[in-house]
Length: 253
Image 1: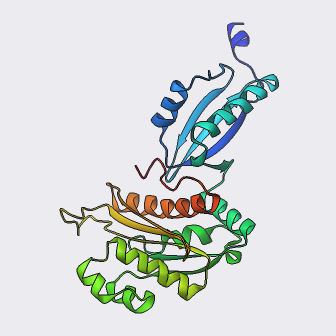
Image 2: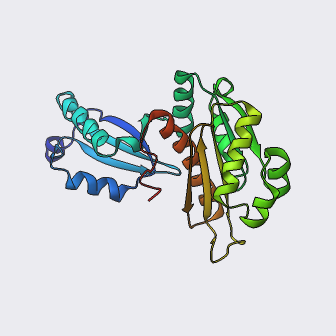
């Protein structure tokens, strides 16, 4: 009898939201600090993954769906630029959708990620409509001969530099004819770091020929962790630019 009073056999009604670049503790703190109260009828859950974090908004009764919709709006207000989509959405799926809606195509120029950005984008069906080409220029020689990066800049600035990723992006855009793109060059480790450029350092350049953004980020961790996050950030930064979202997201800081 006690169990019957407290446990319902009705199926839980769950809304799944996919996010990138913001952690559980930050999300919880934003909700706790928000003047708008969180209704007790809605349970917030997390399912950690790499590179995305899934949020679950669950209610027991149909009459609580209004509260769940209110919570969805609250999350959009607090960190909506980090919400990719619902259900099983991925960064690549959403970026593809945006590119199709805007009638644009994309290219990639990769060094430290070894083609992972292009692989993530083409893993989802429909990529042929929006993806022109991916360039994996791992060595300095290939950066120079394939993408037209200056030999002098490679010698003086190094492959992991703002100057080089700018030229990598410009070369990929010019050779592919794509509208937008992303270029990355970094030190995935475990070796190769210096005091000025420690392991985990990466330079990213993204945008169009008319509007290029660059940023240096340090992502400590394993080689796989570094490559996965750099590739995901590359997709996300292009997504943000196309949607007119802030180009300095939480994870950049």
